[in-house]
Amino acid sequence: MTHDPLPPLRNVIERHDLRARKSLGQNFLLDLNLTSKIARQAGKLTDCDVLEIGPGPGGLTRGLLMEGARKVLAIEKDARCLPALAEISQAYPNRLQVIEGDALDINPLEHLTPPIRVASNLPYNVGTELLIRWLTPKQWPPYWQSLTLMFQREVAQRIVAQAGDKAYGRLAILSQWRCDAQIVVNLPPEAFSPPPKVSSAVVHLTALAEPRFPSDFKTLERVVAMAFNQRRKMLRSSLKSAAPDIEDRLIAAGLKPTERAEQISLEGFCALAREIAKP
Ligand code: SAM
Image (cartoon, rainbow, N blue to C red):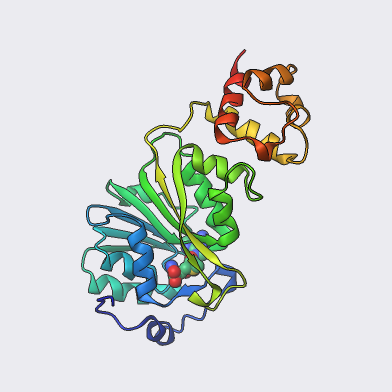
C-alpha cells in the first residue's frame, strides 16, 4: 500500500473535469501503487531532482514524491491540469515545481540542480523526439543520470533490441551506444484511462560515463542511418555513397560486405564508423 495525503486520482480527474484529449496523447495512470512502482525503477530519488514531462493529473508525480524525490520539475502543456498539480504542490511543500508549456520549447536545466534523473509517462506524439534529444546532447556525459520512460511497447522494444531482432535499428544503436537500456515494467492497455489501443512498457536507461565503443558520433549516426534506410540491402550497396572503397573499409572493420544492417552489432557499427572516418 502507498501513503499519499491526497484524494484518489479518479476523484481528482472528476473534480477538475480532466477528460482525456487524444491530441495531447492523454492516457492517464490512476493506480498509485503502479506509479510508485514505476518511480522506484528510476533509482534512488532522495538526493536527486527529477524532470517529469507531461504530469497530467499527477499520478506519476505523486509516485515520484512518495518515493522521496528531492524535487520534481513537471512540464505540462495542458493548462487544465494545473489546479490538480497545485494541490500536489501544497501537499509536498517546496518539492514540486510545475511549468506550463511545451516540453520541446523549454530548457529544464535552468530549474534543476544535479544530480538529475528523468522519469515520465511520455505523450506518444513527442516521446521519440524527446528521447533522441536526451540521447544526443552536445556534451557527454549528459545532464541526467538516468531516463525512466513509458513508451508504446513497440517503441520500447526498438530501444532495447539487439542485432538480429526485428526491432533492431537506429534507435537501438543510439540508445545503447552510451547507455545501458532495459525494459523494467510491462503494462497492458487496461492500466490506463482511457485504455490505449496498444500495450506499453517502461524503459530504464542509465548514462554510461563514456561510449561503449569509441566512435565519432556524427559518422556513426550517418553510417547507421544509411545502413538502415535500406535495411534489406547488403552493406556494400546500402553504404556505397559513404566511401568509394567501401568494401575494403567494411573488411577492415571486420564486417562482410554481403551482410545487412540488421545483422551488425553495435560494436561492428562503431568499428565501421572509425574506418569510414579515416582519410
Ligand atoms: N503522467 C500522467 C500519467 O502518467 O497519468 C499523464 C501521461 S499522458 C500519457 C501524457 C501527458 O503529457 C498529458 O498530460 C499531456 O497533456 C502532456 N503533454 C502532451 N504533449 C506535451 C508536450 N509537448 N509538452 C508537455 N506535456 C505534454
